[in-house]
Length: 241
Image 1 (cartoon, rainbow, N blue to C red):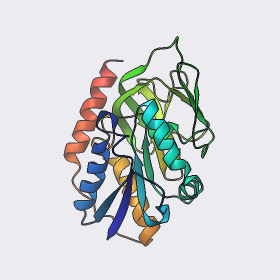
Image 2 (image 1 turned 90 degrees about the vertical axis):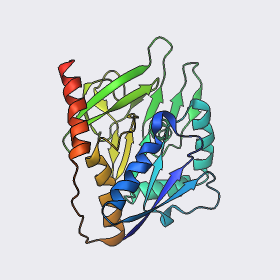
Image 3 (image 1 turned 45 degrees about the vertical axis):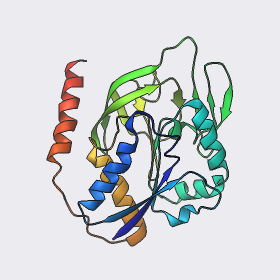
Image 4 (image 1 turned 60 degrees about the vertical axis):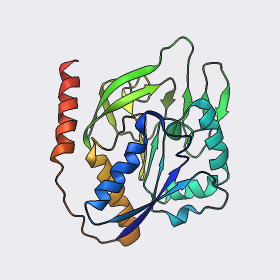
């Protein structure tokens, strides 16, 4: 079996080890005998999202986020169609934020987003950045652990990854983390999120295989190391509550 991943703007959107997510997807495909071809996309002028089976967008600074938004604006309609059609995707921090209507900086400047999904993000001068380890309880994925570092607070009414037990998540008020819409995952978890949350990684791979091949056998692999890391971090955070 073969899959193709579009990795958007790896030269600009790679804060806090986000490249580790691509490595995790590659390895977990490889361990199952699936060939994952990774194509780095730095210019969207001549690409077709219909040619990829999943995509990844990492986090970046406000400036880099603005540059990336300009690139994505060229394929906005196709990008929206891919999301609505169920193409699996992982978007981190800035890559998550610019899917919405706008990002408001601490200076009050509204940076336009792609407005593909109905949400917005705002930063406030009188509120601190949301930084630290995070534990999320998810009905679909079990415990999700990671690290967050963001000034923006995101507000939406879509499904989420789960409930924040320790940390902040989308904002510091509703105790929810991320966004789960069709097969799109938006999240503030850096660190990277996928290596120590194999259930999330496999969700993306399974969705890509299902879209492309329909019926398939998804081989089990040994997750002891990944799940031990996940439990170890989850236990530490719960005990610090």
